[in-house]
Image 1 (tube, rainbow, N blue to C red):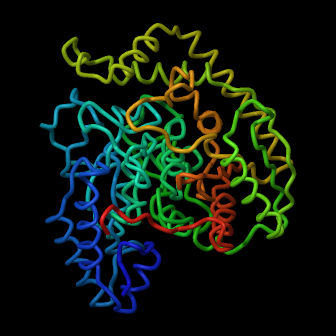
Image 2: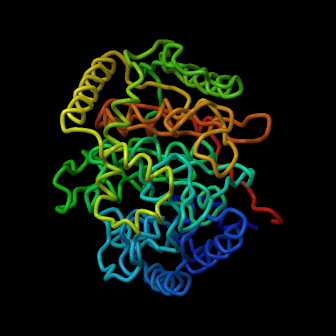
Length: 469
């Protein structure tokens, strides 16, 4: 018998059309799974069971009449608790946010899901204001890895990654300011895309500025393409949103990789120490792309680590997020967040503009690089999931989360589309991710290449089973 929690959104929708199962059955299964995993993994801030089932019944009636609403009618979805969702407090992992509010507006991506009939089953966890690459907060505690609950799920969209990996809804909305959909996707063995900046509108505007993206977190690339067809359209509330895409992302998936010019950089020119098991799994996936017809060259982009410039931009944004808080509220903050806010408040306007100069030069160099190469492939992360709780792996010598995420944050600075694809596991069974990067506006190429890896069996949409199942 088919387990509905094992299915992708594409497969669920096909079953709705054929009458094999219903939105109510799928929603009930997703909610039951969410409730089952919550005590051990802590992926959710809240679940909305009664409302979700009411919406699922409405969807079921539309399918019965042969009049589904939009592209996702009846699909269970989750939303990171950074994005506004009408009727639900968005507390952003912080005790400093007052839950008593109107909460009467959807973020653009959430609004598009609602218009297309998606069923919201819950809000997922985030570190406070999404500030770091692991998911724990003073408000909601620690989110844990589906493959080993003693390990971190990654972050900052760790709750979304864990929920998708464990079958609590096939689709989730995450946010990514320095790797925050790709890091947990790599650690949790799912697919995630950070789109080109502006492709998915964001409102309210992020204090982290144009580093911040909204992106799909899904079982596979086909589901992300479907989700992008829903959320990747302009919204008048975001003045930086791009014009509509030229076509549907789902229609371009089948193009394959034959003839694509692919650059493979295993360590960004020796700048990153990559764990051997990670390097081996990534190289194996790259070799498979070559077998599928891509022209693969092992080479490195003209990219020096921009971490200091990133810190200037990121820490300044954090200071801006919290500047309105009084002394008592600041005492409630995550101590690490307080540290970077204090540092960010000390930067001058000239410091900030100097970081912008670094960013613009990096964007220029990557733009030239993609004149020669359609795609850049790297590991998503140099490591697999480490102990849950700390910001950095014990004994690593890193001070901040950026020390172990050197492959992700540069592409927030350049605004390029970048995805993480699961391509294997280490000796402990922990997932390993491959990162695919393309030139700005070529989200279609990233999705197409990722889909080819799934079709070839290199990437797996397999779901980990919760304990006792």
